[in-house]
Image 1 (cartoon, one colour):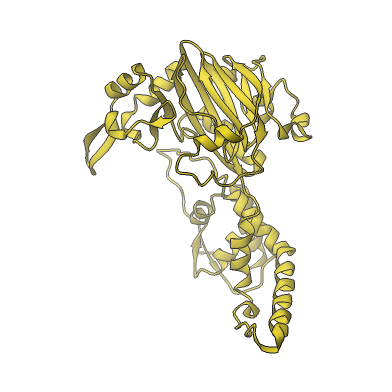
Image 2 (image 1 turned 45 degrees about the vertical axis):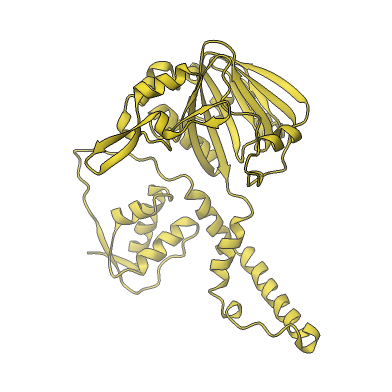
Length: 375
C-alpha cells in the first residue's frame, strides 16, 4: 500500500476529492493486502520490544477515558544519559490484563511500510502526518466520545472494533473545548447516533476533523493504526504576513494618536497599511512562502547509505547576477548566495523540504550563469 489511492481502494479517489471528503467513509477490506499487513501482531510486538525507544509520552495507557499514571506501568531505568522513566513490558502487560488500552504514538517512521504511506499522504494533502497504533480488548473503551483536530484514516489490522459515529460535527476546530474535563461537553453536543461501523481486518474508516465519534473493541484483541492529517490553515497567514510586513518601513512607523483629528490620520495610515498587506498576500513571493511552509511538513525521507561516504562539493558566490529562481529553491539559493562559500551537500541537508533534484538543478544553473563558481 503505497498511496492514498490504494488506501481508499475500492472507493474512487476522484469521488473522495469531489465531495466525499466532507463526510465519514467506511471502506470494507478489498483486494489490497497491504492494508491488513501494514501492522500485524508480529510487527507491533517487535516494535514494542525495542524498549529503549519508548517513553511514557510515546507509549501511553488509557482506561475508561483516563490516562494511566506513568508510575503504574513505567520503571526508572538506568541509561548512559542518566535515569529515564521507561515503560516496563511486565507492568504494561499487567495493565492490559486489568482493562487498559495501549497507544503507541508517533510510529510513522518505525517501519518502511508505515513511513512510505505517511510520506505519500503528506505529499497528497500538503500536511503533517502522524501515525499512532491502538491495542485494546473486548469490552474495553479507551476514549469516550470526542472529535479530533485533524482528519483521520483508521486502518483495522487485527481483530474487530465497533466505531460509533454521531450526527454532529464541530466547524473546522483548531482547539479542543476549554474545559478541564471536556467529556460532558462532548456527550452533550455529539447529537444522535448516525452510524455504527464494525471494523474488520483490512477495513479503512475516514473521519473528517471535528466529527464526533467513539470506538469499542467487541471481543478478543483489536489492533488498528490511525493516520492523522493536519494541513496548514489560515492562521499561518498571520505569522508569515508579520515576517514579510516588517521588512517594509511603513509597518515600523509610529501610529498617530487615535484622539487627534477625530482619528482621521490613524484611519488613513491603517488603510495604507491594509493595502500594503493585501499587496504582500497576493504577491508571488508570499505564495512561495506558503508553498515553502507546506513543503516543510514533508521533509525528504531519512535514509542512510553507509558505508558510503559523501563527496563534498564547495562553491563560492562571484557577485555576478544569476538566474531568477522561484519557489522553495529560491530561498535555498538566496541562502547560498549570502555565504562566502557553501557546500552543495550542506545546502541539501539544510533545505530538506526542497526536492534534492531541484536544488542540484538550481546550482547547475547558477554555476552556468557565473553567479557561483566551484572551489
